[in-house]
Length: 256
Image (cartoon, rainbow, N blue to C red):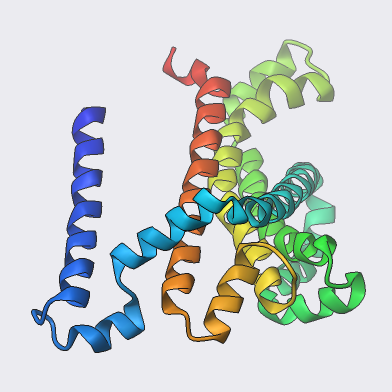
């Protein structure tokens, strides 16, 4: 599909949703607008609140805190997932031994871990980073593990016939084969890194987007809650766009 047409359709969907939201909170088309706006806020007031935050500069500090936590969680979680994913895929015995423990750890509800991390690491940045790592690690780990296992056996056999050692196989066969799986997991894990940071801030923090949303919710400021979610959504989309640009750069060989 043409990119311009796709972008136009995406914009039309956003416009349609915003129009329905505006009509629901400002007209009687869907019921009492005052009741609806109490629960869903007025989109115009939400936009005004977001503009006010950026105009006064009060949002930048909170954005920086959430960004720092998300980047650290993403980098550390992704690095660990890639390393252990490759290691387990190349060592079947290790993978078989630790398989039930990995699955058990992945099954743990992350929200339950948040208070534990706060107890271990305090209410500073590292409790949020730890929560984000637990969300990112397993997404990357399972994708990398599967990507390495899906290496074409004929390609692998030919590479070995040409005399490649394990290091060369890793660089020229395993890594290119798993790269698509890696970036597929990174796209998903970017959002989860932010989720981990925001949830941690929501449960206990003095700054960050999660803190802003929690403070607004505490005084029944629905406009503030939705404004925080709008900023958070834009933040995640921006980070995902950066990841897409990096992916296109590193995987440009696929189109050749």
